[in-house]
Length: 152
Image (cartoon, rainbow, N blue to C red; front, side, top):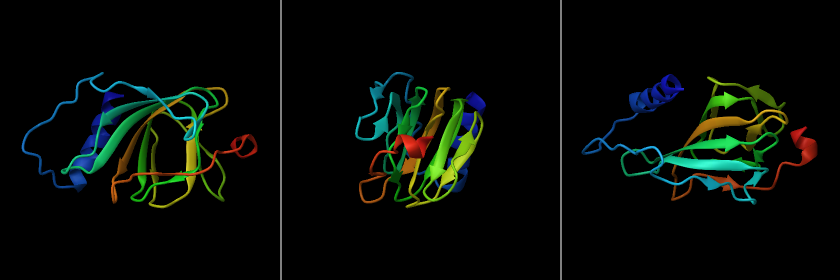
């Protein structure tokens, strides 16, 4: 998992100029984990903020842990979203297309404004790192829940 996180960080840093004045270390557990809000998730999801956006990165990085059957609601991101699956088995679906399975080590790029959902399969938990960028003070537009019929 450390190799996956390091690769993601290098990919992000390799494509953007970093203008921070000094190294910032966010210690494990520095920011408490929170349960996903019922209006944004179906089932149990726990979100751990790893890096809040700042003037240098404008990026938000978090770890999301989904229990079996848990998933996001339909949503979009104004500047896209990068997912890196770290454990378990999950699904991701773009509106109008077939649901796809995602597994540890998979890297998923979701382009800006593409309507989608993601979460664990019905029988396995799944965790991923999620990176989004702030645009006009927002990084996501939450929409309606994914129905059980759409999920299955």
